Structures are given as C-alpha cells and as structure tokens.
Length: 198
Image (cartoon, rainbow, N blue to C red; front, side, top):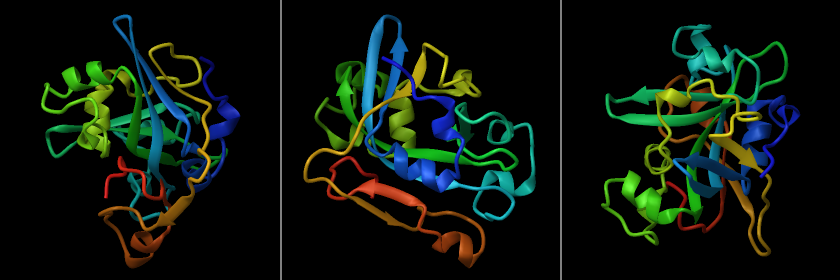
C-alpha cells in the first residue's frame, strides 16, 4: 500500500478533514495488518480556533501540530484514552485533524483483541469513536510524531466514498472554546454509516 503524499496534508485542516473521509487508515503490527475506512473526522486550526490545542501556541504536547504536515499527533486524555490526529496545515499555520471513527476493513479479530475481547468483529462499538479506534488499532504515544508519509507501521492510503454514500458536516463534538469555535462546521462524516461516533 502507498501512503498519501505530504502535499495531501499541506492544506487547511478542515479541507483535509473532509478529504480524509473514505481514505484507509492502515496499521502494521507484529506481522498483522489492521485497516479501517475513515468515516468521521474533524479539523482544528491554530490560534484563531479556540477549540484547538494549537490556540495556546506550541507546547511539549501539541508540537506535532506545528511541525511538518503528514505526521501523527497522538495525545492522552482523561487519564485513560489515546486520541489519534494527523498534522494538517499549509505552511505558516498549525493544525490537525482528529480521526473520530473507522469502519473496519481488515484485521477485525486483532482489533477485538486490542480492545480486550469486549466486542465482536461486527460490533459497531469496536471503532465508533476516537478513543475506541485508537485502542482497536493499537495507536498510542509511541506513535506520536510518526511520519504517516514514510513510517511503515502507520499510514493513510487512498480510498473513496462508495456508490450512494454522501458526506454530511456540522459542528465538532463537545469542543471547548467560544461560541464561534463550537459552531464551526468542521466535522465531516458519512451519513448513515453505522460506525460514526454519534
């Protein structure tokens, strides 16, 4: 499989978030391939986006948002969950896209194992949220800042919407910040897909 080129990510985060819908997230783990189709994602910009980690400027946590596009930004939240993002921005501005939900394509049994055996391979709860998909795909802090355009362990490859599918957009889910940040329609999803997070 060939990863998406860096130029794909070198655009405004909300543009990349929309373009990522239908693409495939691929993880190689101990000789096993895990793959899922991205069915929900949301974009976060820089200082002009009060909901974004980048609004405060670069820190030890959010530095991938300020680095080259096409790198992973993986952070820990609530003391229990990893969240997988992709650094996405044109030159001169930070940004990232949170991958919110996947439709499993390959390695679902291994995903079940990664989730502690609590769900069957056909259970939508296997990957229907950002924390769930990160756990299912065995994505954790060791992959923070991984180069998705070159790293063999984690990449995003081509994919598209299927016949009869269409995109919806709306405000991001449970974001902090001001009213403007909460109203931005920078969350995108495949309407009616059973794996979307809400």
